[in-house]
Amino acid sequence: MDDPARGRTLTRAPDVHDPLVPDGLDATLVLVRHGESTFIAEGRFQGQADPPLTAVGRRQAALVAERLAAPHDPPALPVPIGALVELVHSPLGRTTETAEAIEAALARAGRSTTRRADPGFLELDQGDWQGLHRTEIAERYGDRLAAWRRTPVEAWAPGGESLRDAAARVRPAIAALLAPLAKGRARGTHDRSQVAGFGDPRPDHPWSVVVGHDGVFKIVLLTLFALPLERFWMWSMDLCGITIVELRAGRAVLRAHDLTAHLVDLEDVPTQEAAADRARSGAL
Image 1 (cartoon, rainbow, N blue to C red):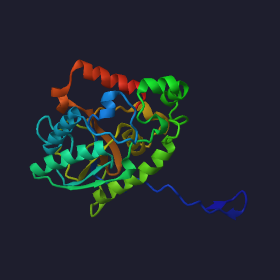
Image 2 (cartoon, rainbow, N blue to C red):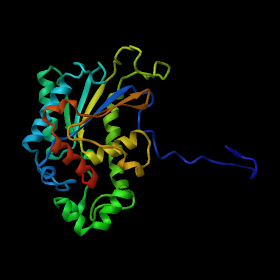
Image 3 (cartoon, rainbow, N blue to C red):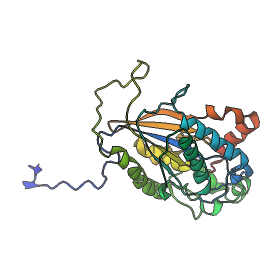
Image 4 (cartoon, helix red, strand yellow):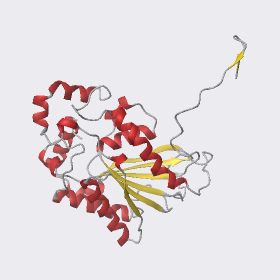
């Protein structure tokens, strides 16, 4: 382009940030947090430590699996009628166990799909805090923990992973998730109804399920909605909760967040209070 004031031609710098979502993509992502692990039951920070599911966690996984195997049964989940393309999960044990339960339920329902692990969806590495009880962390690292809760972009666990580093590995994992959803598909359009409640037919486009962690899903959502990492704490994910993001011609739309009705038989007041207390602690 020309710069008349200087009498010379300027060359625009190449855009090093390629668009994450394929242009015109119509697709749906279903995000599922893993079930309860032994570290969660014990009140320990886990990060990329690898504790197994508890008996409660395995039951949570079975219930969310049953829900996803029959997503259109009332009350229907806002997922399309198109093909289920992939079941992707973090390679840690608690997510793998949860994904395996979903895979088995899908197979029983005649919805067999490809399952793969992707390290891009690992939980945030919490360094020296991993395996420690939250009260011990508060006693030994009180100032750092307070900073993590208040300014998570500027402070994180000693020896752990910053939000910027985590976001850098999450972005290509999202791209790899979206690529097969776009393959061979015609571009969608925004020139259609964008408001629910008018009896429009359920969309006929592909979808995929991701089984991951609270912290990494916070980053996934911030990335999909182009929000700054400073908004990290705006999202909350319950164990085996379901969050659904629809991509309409490449534009992300939050269709449902942290659905847990399928777990109602497991819920009681002490369990709910413990989950709320953990969320306030800043544990991942």
